[in-house]
Image 1 (cartoon, rainbow, N blue to C red):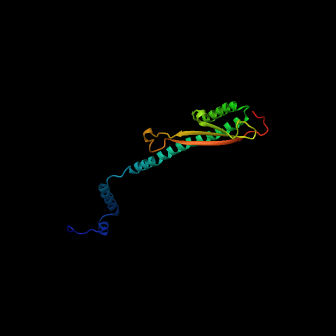
Image 2: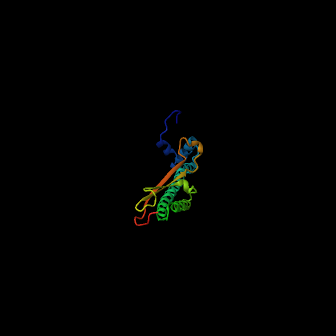
Image 3: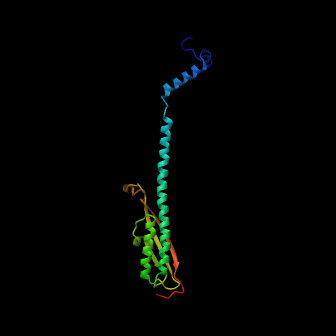
Length: 175
C-alpha cells in the first residue's frame, strides 16, 4: 500500500477478521474520547440531585402550608362556635383563645393565640340573639432553610388565614 492512499472499510475487513476491526475501532475511539467507564453513574446522580432536592423542598413547604391550613380552619370554626355558646362575651373570648391555642398546637404551631385570633361581632353587645360572630385566625408559615438576608427578594413566610361566622341563637336570653 502506498503512502497517502485511501483505505476503505471493505479493504480493511477483507484483510482483517471482523472482530479485529471492531476492537481496533473501539480502541481508537477510547484513545480519542477517553475512558467512559462510570460516567453514566455520575450523570444519573447529578441529575437525580438536581431534580430530587427541589422536589423534597417543595414537599416540605407544602406540608407545612397544609398543616397551617388545617390549623386555622379548625381554630376559626371552633373559636366562633365556642364564643356563641358562652354565657357572656368575656367567657366567650377566653374559650375562643383556648380553642385557637389547642388547634394551633395540634398542628405544631406555637404562635400566640391572642395574636392569631380576631373576633368581630355584628351587634353590640356581642351575644345579642340573632347576631353573628366572625372569628378570623391567621398564621404565618416560615419557609424552611431560607436565609434571612434574602428577605428583600423572597418572602420568608407564607400567610395562611381562615374566617368562620357563627350565628348567635335567636332564642337565647340577651346578656
